[in-house]
Amino acid sequence: MANSKDEPAFLAHQCYLKKDYAGAMQHLNELETIVGNNSSLLKRVQHNKAVVEFAISDMKNIDAFKKSITQFTGLNFSEVDIKDTNIPCLLYNYAVVLYHSRYYYQCTVVLEKLLTCKNINDTKLHHRIILLLLEATLCRRTYEKTLEIAKNHGEPLKSNNEVSDLYERLVSRAQLYLGQKVNLKPDSIENIFIIAQQKFLNGDTIDSANTLGQYKTMKFNYDLKTQGEDIWAAINNNLGVIYLSIKKPFLATKYFQHAVKEHFRAMESEDSEMLIACKDRPLYVYNLGLALLAANNSEGAFECLVEAARHYPNNPRIWLRLAECCVKKCCNEEAQQFTVKKLGSGPHTRILLSKENKEKYSTSGESFAIPSLSLEFAALCLRNAISLLPDQEAVSDTSTASIQAPPGPPINWKQRCDLKNSILVLQSYIFLYLQDPLSALMSANELLSQSDATTCQKAWAHIYAAEALINLDKITDAVDHLHPPMIHDLVSVLPSQMRDMIAVSVWAKAAVCHILRGDLITARKILLQINSPRVLPLQMYLEICTGNIENCHTILRKIRISNTS
Image (tube, rainbow, N blue to C red; front, side):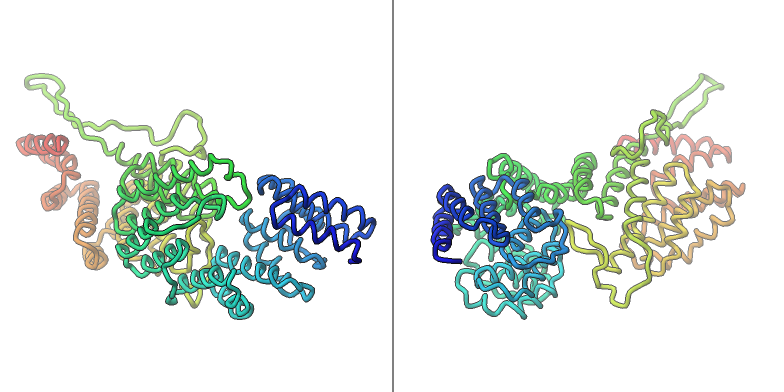
């Protein structure tokens, strides 16, 4: 620029640094008049005016700033087909907006193009590009890429006192997720978070909680306006994660509820409209939903997870958890107590053992796609979860992440297979409750065909397949799934409680098969070996069929006692 142009540009910059935005705008208007029809310089001046206007709004007029940025770049928002890199500051600001709009991939593409530019003479801008690129790659969970960028471009940042601490934290976060040792001093609240997370990932949950507690002894300026995040929401959320990991869901629920409340309080302030404001309510609500589900509060968990599913519809884990909420609620309701009724009197007395039969399918005409605690909605959730786990050939490295599942970490091949098998088990169970034995059998058989299914999953698949075949009147095929030596081999390595639960289910199904074959004596012998109130109605049926009326009275007393307890 000539000297006449240089003076207003310099003065505008000085005013901007002093936060005298009105003065900065005045000098920029003056500069705009001097520049005239020089399109390149005019675009730069107008871009600076847009930045100043955005600063005047306290970074709240986001839509107007987006519109200005896209107008100057000639792109629609989130497009990255950049051809003109002559104004690096403009592209950097575009990357900033993309980052805070959570377009992390697009942000990375823009910043990588900027790094290849040779016309960036501003060292400060160059450092900011590198720092934002490190942050964007962390958000994309491409941690190897983060360390690669740090290795190739990070050396100048280590000697810059203004950004060296931030640079060290970004690199440490990548090292942390890759299992590498992190050496940070606990001299800032940001470092405290990273050190606590390292201890948590190493299994030192108590030390992790104690490290987080060090915030009480520190002075820090960490709030929504300066960092874009509420410190109290973050601390409560992290403590909730710690307690949930050590199977204390009620305590975890308390901390997650505090996190949601603190975040809600922060979002009520005027600062919540700023570009940098981190609106993490869906994350906190998702964690709260998991804690409530672990605490057997299926209704509360369902409400939280439905909200999380609206924000993270591509996460198959959320759909599976929603189905679990429905099963916990519906199957507990349907497992009603048997009622003993006496009909008639004297020699005409009849004992009626009844259970209220609910309609399996809604007749109200409402769509099953509307979120509700029903088994029909659970089946739909599992269908969504299966569709998000596409069939593909096994990979050589089963630990390689292949499916993105925000807000959690990506799902690798081994996790994908285990998740799909869990979905198939639950799907078969739900179809049996919905009186759809053919679909239940298909899900069970698909699971049995999976080479990587666990022994527990295979055992339940055999049980559900047998029940489906019984309902389809294929008794011989059902018996094949209940072969005692095969089931014993599958469950021998399981915990005793799970082993006993499977044993009761297997022998009960075997007794049903013998009853349907007409072999009541063998069925009675099997049921007498089972010590569970679940088979009492079946024993009652057999005693009536074999004419042992006295035994019926004994079983009735047992049913009354089990109902009371």
